Amino acid sequence: MKILVPVKRVIDYNVKPRVKPDGTGVDLANVKMSMNPFDEIAVEEAIRLKEKGAATEIVAVSIGPAKAQETLRTALAMGADRAILIQTDDEVEPLAVAKLLKAVADEEQPGLVILGKQAIDDDSNQTGQMLAAMMGRPQGTFASKVELSGDTVTVTREVDGGLETVSLKTPAIVTTDLRLNEPRYASLPNIMKAKSKPLAQKTPADYGVDTAPRLKTLKVAEPPKRSAGVKVADVDELIAKLTNLGVVA
Amino acid sequence: MKTLVLADHDNKVLKDATLAVVTAAAKLGEVHILVAGTNCELVADHAAKVAGVSLVLLAEDPAYEHELAENVAPLIVNLMADRDAFLAPATSTGKNVAPRVAALLDVMQVSDILSVEGPDTFTRPIYAGNAIATVQSSDAKKVITVRGTAFEKAAREGGNAQVEKIGTTGDAGLSNFVGAELSKSERPELTSAKVIVSGGRALQNGENFHALIEPLADKLKAAVGASRAAVDAGYVPNDYQVGQTGKIVAPEVYIAIGISGAIQHLAGMKDSKTIIAINKDEDAPIFQVADIGLVGDLFKVVPELTEKLPG
Image (cartoon, rainbow over all chains, first blue to last red; front, top):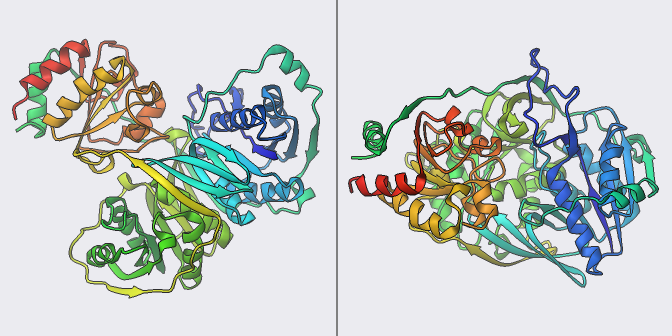
């Protein structure tokens, strides 16, 4: 079985994003960029399925600028077999990303598509579900455990009340949550090896997908700031404050 | 404008998250609620009483019992033929179903809205809440998920909507519900609690978490939350997690114990009315957002606090 793993190049999760003074967006100039952490988990899960013998080939795909190649090389260094870059300098919304991934899936015919539940830049949490809808296939979102057996994938999902398990017929779409696994670091020899793995370059036009945005960003602003309050010296003073707030009768 | 709201429920009770969505939907137009489930007439009766709701659509089918997106999305798509906006709560159910509906309608969803600025304009958090974007949708129909803490809850009483039973779309035959391990608790639910006591990695292990955090929460009749670090370390299950990737909460009082205050945690609780922090590190980032801070060893301070609290 082939596994398709979409990955996105985003601001590194350790960097504090800064809103541009003119309110047009977040400043990404000279900011460290990395693979979306949820996508790293997706790559790792695909590799583990291959190591168990449940998968035969892992294809990583990214939609973004030329530099998204670096993100794909990271996926290849972790253990993906080959990569596809759909290059565009435009911002592509989840709906159009899902359409492009659908086109790639039509060509590649994967048994599983594993992707992050959301990207940490626009926090939409949509692409996997949209792709599943477009492919007419089932979805296992917010996965904390994935088990493949024959043509069935059993997914344990992190839901508001705890955990829920669903079984899906493959081909299926899985989106990863934080506790699915801990992604490996690529070793130096594997980073070197990744440089010679195949990376195909495409454009959205190659797939006949219109990526024109449907949402227009009118403004990006800083959230209202909270300021630090007072420090209390001891528990008695804290209880007095709690009493004032009406929390303690 | 006619809107359709997806009711979040467990086939018995209409969940609070739905009430905030009703408020958001009412800003756009007429509010219809879809109750999709099985043997869930009681939920439809609850929904009919919610202030501001003009019609309740009741779709009962075993295929809808666990709100599987593969089965519920086609039903919603049919209902959207003569409605203009679909709104779901940004709960695990809503987040699972809404994008599937959006794709089938060829609409770019607006996720996790904080406010309705106009019929096609909304604000939403990006970059883990480090920025707020105002976005305008050019799609003819809107698909929206709503952050529950950002809108007042519509009143559970005062409405008198008609309940209409509708036909169902059946089982898509793609997915099956296997089971659930839901945390059982006598305490209030995190997302609707007035007071939350949350613990972090400084508690060192699950035993300490239970021994220190829970008695304090019980005295304050509070819900119990945790930081991602505490959940990842296995002190408590995933549904305790407060933060960008866990639950977004905004109680009257949030008490953070042994939580340093990582960005991703702050994103989940910084809209709380009053934040209280107990931490032995006086430079911990949590103190920068806390209204009341107590620098001290939680292993000493928390038992003392629990003991001295009346009740």
